[in-house]
Image 1 (cartoon, rainbow, N blue to C red):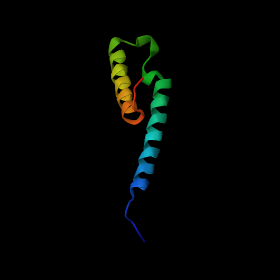
Image 2 (image 1 turned 180 degrees about the vertical axis):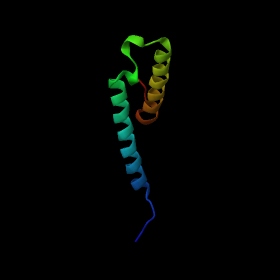
Image 3 (image 1 turned 135 degrees about the horizontal axis):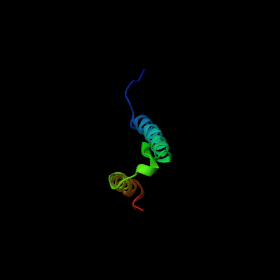
Image 4 (image 1 turned 90 degrees about the vertical axis):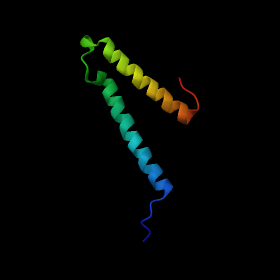
Length: 67
């Protein structure tokens, strides 16, 4: 039996892990990241700015452009 991990096996496992993380991110987004909408402050806005930039960076890597 061959127990050597192939690139495609690891690729598919990482793709599945990314799908889980994206779904969790969507849940957090739908719940205002756990913040009370009436108590949002500029620190929260800054945090989301960094998240948005990180997502743009990821899209630039994989899509060749950012939004």
